[in-house]
Image (cartoon, rainbow, N blue to C red; front, side, top):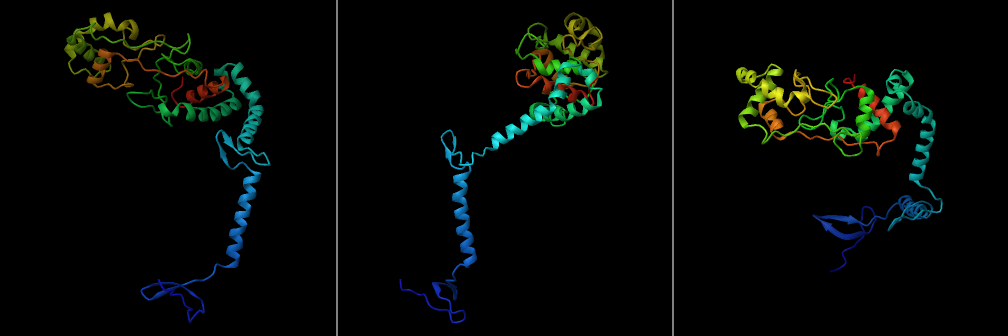
Length: 289
């Protein structure tokens, strides 16, 4: 292809030889200041890679001549913060949590730290606002607690979990399955009786007739009045708070197949101080006792 470069008459600048619709591209040189800036950034980049961690290796990166490490800096800052809070942590761990929750200084410290612990460890299940998820995870904002909502009980639950086989102190209560134990018609009757405890029975006559079934099969855990027993973690069937749902189909599924929800144990994952903080934090959310 012939060289179409020429000198533009108006600017006296040589063209590149490219032309579109009569418009010719000028081969204008880059400004000196721009070129020197570019060269300067290249030189700075080379110096930076020599002085600072930069090039990735198989199991790390080049350390750099200055030996800078953001990880070490963060670790040092965390160690400094831990040392500054050591006295408060010791007071939380060694003292009575119920009393600590009434100490303004400890309460502020525990709720601030407990909120962070909650967001990092509990919010994935219970939600950022601790409202839970119907059918899966309990709402921590109400006053309906299977095992109790005082701060010491919450601490025990966080430490050892529920049905988690973490240690001998994990809570082990469960809702058994009655499939094969009761006839389908008997389960239908129990559904109506359970609904009647909160005033929602669709068949009051069937509910009344099923009271003996409840007394024989359910009262041992839920109590004769259906209000539950915290010693075994059984639910109160007389209120309007239901983890899995209060419709007849859900109650039928619960009686037929049982429920075996779990709460992980955090005793091996969190420090005693962090467990104390999150226990106090949860207790102050509105549903603590």
